[in-house]
Figure 1 (tube, rainbow, N blue to C red):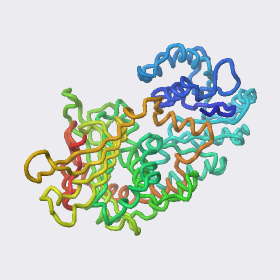
Figure 2 (cartoon, helix red, strand yellow):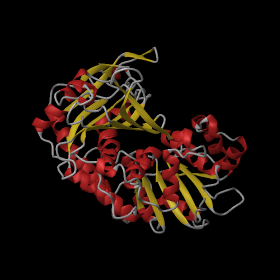
Figure 3 (cartoon, one colour):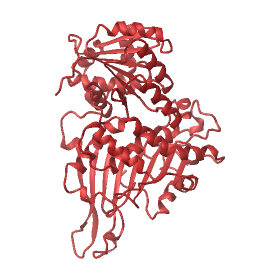
Figure 4 (spheres, rainbow, N blue to C red):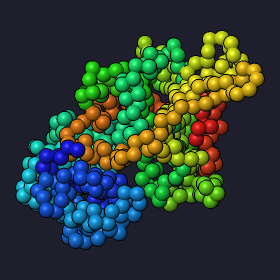
Length: 491
């Protein structure tokens, strides 16, 4: 276990939902296993919470007790570790819109050794004022800055934020976080492809019929209707999480596992995505919005009945689309992406469907694409499952689908990091490979821009689907026109 060099972790937006649900629980997990290198009795690592709320350190620790503790899973809970973790947290109120108040922050940090980490768990509208405040106080040197999504709402706003932040911090100081890149199964996808000789020859258009990437949520907007009205599924999930997963699946072997070598290959994939136009958006992109229905046998409201959502909302809560990569490895292989809220189950997975055998020597079962498929499950349980056909016991040559499993929680019994825990430790230790570079992010915005433009000109709203289902029927029709269907029997 590596002990990090001295650092101070400054958490902006410390009383917000993201800090309490994700950031602080992840820091606690790392603290509990000794990976933060911090303790009240040491001078290695410190957490300084910052928000507008007028309170002192003791009040903020009580706030964490009331609002963050509930988001820590029982299997990692440790009362003594929690008390020691809280003792490492300091607090200061700060009006993020006033540059002059950043001088007090600089005075507080002058007492601390090592690198400064600024985590912006705020809305993107505050990114530029915070960065300008940090520069005015001379805090942009010997520091790292973490930017949460969404980074803008379109290409132009993303460029504006990146230009402003890039004028204050170097690119190697900027950590644009996408928590799906921190998931264990995503890392194992790289290990699967580049650490084993048997898979790389199978990773190409000659053998793969299609690839599906699904991120499905059973939850709704959870009281954040006003926020989601400004975001929608395309911005919230497709532009970042789904396209990042696509890039990792489709990338060429990098020259090394250094940050820029990996990100160079992802960028090449994003640049190879076939551009969209009105015709292809109309044919190959489905947007939906959930209506009322049932989740786990409990009635749930329609999106337009959620708090903060107008009754005539046209915001999409579901997107399914077909993408194509115009390069030598993937030409002709469709990539089907799907995401949505209030779907049948919470699941994120990548399905690689292999082509059928060239001749059905052993019967019709071998003639269907997907009889051989690789399923990489990202959540809720991380696993890799390889499907193939085998002979059923008894007379005759009757084939049945069987699978080989790698269930990480069964095979690896030690401590397993969650995505945020891994990414926060990478920030603390200065590792950039799992963070999104500016050119990657802007290329992803560039690719989805025709979808945004087409929808903005349409008078027809999103297609409705009942909560608890797998989206509007048009999503199934999208795949049917290409002779395939969503793989849902594993879900």
